[in-house]
Image 1 (spheres, rainbow, N blue to C red):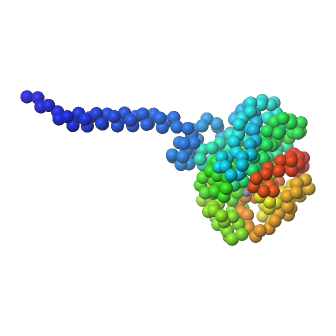
Image 2 (tube, rainbow, N blue to C red):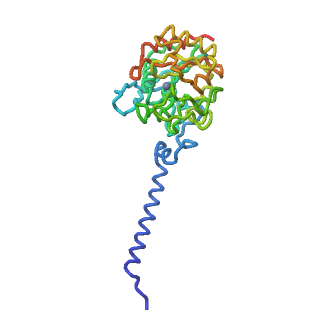
Image 3 (cartoon, protein in one colour):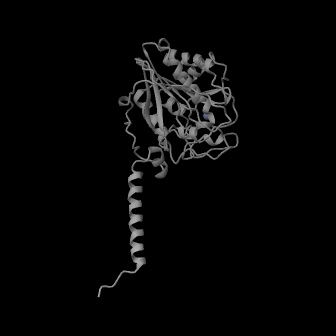
Length: 323
Ligand SMILES: [Zn+2]
């Protein structure tokens, strides 16, 4: 005689099938997660899924200038970039040159096509210095409408934010480091890199490191590669606030000192920079100076204003730079 299955056995099988079906759906959905989220789930993605290749030469897209927005410091929202479809024969961007720890794109805008190469870097200290990113966005939007400002023999690159994770995190002290807690302006494989330093007169509001080793961070590596390929002769890395103009190199690199002097003739920022007793190590400007680029760290007046008119004059000095 055939024994009838008890009711709970059928119920158990039903449950099994439901769970298995659910798992299958979840697996299919995970495959379609946006890169940001996938990056967050798996922590640092080694090779971003997004299609942009690493070689910036092959990533040129029709130019679309961002609209610079200066959000009030009280809101948590980072400066937003709204691409305006302005196609210009002399400009390209955004060109994605790499990705942050959190999988956010590092975006460069290019103006002109000449052999003299100049570079502006903003936002290395993320949301804490968000006004440098707002300044870069204002410059990009302005230059898009002023092609005559870029001479035929010049190419100008503007990297609007080297630390988009910090930019997205907050507009206060907590927005300074990248997603690995690293100060990106201490992570460069310059001769000045150190694993630790005296914090007494330096940044000590939040915990930071200089990375597990020189050049440990994807943001650093992406820009290092870009600079190695495009070989600018002069570079400004923007910070805030108020300490002045710091030439790269220890001892200061002569070409970088000359750039700092020329800039100090055009802008009101202190030069020599204010000495607060902090030792700066492994900076972008140090690395650049050691690789033949005249480079300065330059600080805006405060943490809110972009000092736009002042920095149009700085841009002119950068464009006019002669080796
Ligand atoms: Zn800074």
